[in-house]
Length: 336
Image (cartoon, rainbow, N blue to C red; front, side, top):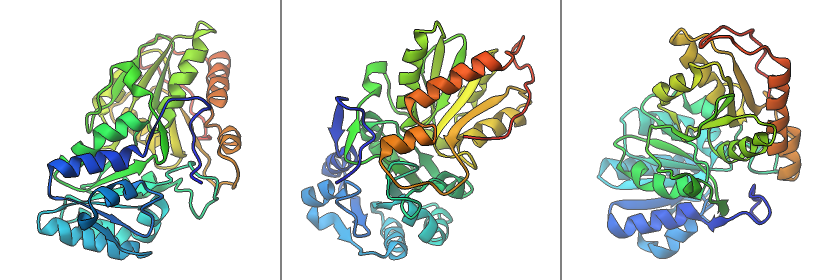
């Protein structure tokens, strides 16, 4: 059973990554797929069944899989190598860094179960994968919101000249962004909603929650903008600066530890540009998380829509608002 973060009755698409990769392979003979004994659980089985001669089952050997993908890229193929995010980052980082990123090869690493998308506990919860990989040169990092993002991202990842890392949402994945006239552009953020009072800068599945929270807050006459950041590295700094250079409350949302992910990337962007805007991080705490049911865990760790709405209301009610664009704000410890 694949746990889903989709809401009851929400519109979903089955295995969007696998179907997008299989379609792309029909047009591009260079596309190959690899799996570390997890094809079914990374949606790579869709590609395997459609193109069995171009699929390589590497067994439970993630280092070998990434090394083989590097060799395939050296001879002109375009590999997509899939496993769980914890194994691609914690277990095989050296191979990703030196075999793939250092020679700047077109290898696309696909990591399932990013952040808090499983209740299996710390052995499978990749809550720190962005922190690990943001420091790797040449690597492009994509954290999609939904099935629309994934389907549109796959061809662009294949076309990118260097290595990429995709935080995969698997199984029945919600479809949300097609309601917002959205198109995925590698390296670009997208403003999905405008708003005068609050701007939510979000990535990954948290953009879905940001949109839900914005609709809920409308009932309180709170006008909320949502800036979706599907590419975490390289960050669309111009879009982030434009969003933060106002008198709005700035909140970041990510399915990742508060250490080393979107919040710190946004905060450093503002600091380096001399913008003194306070950033409120909604993220996972800097700790190993519990096992359990996803809805319960998302409530417990502040990723649910209810938790986001409560946090924004508290910030608006208890935090002095700036009186001019770029006004400095008191600093607070980075808690989830």
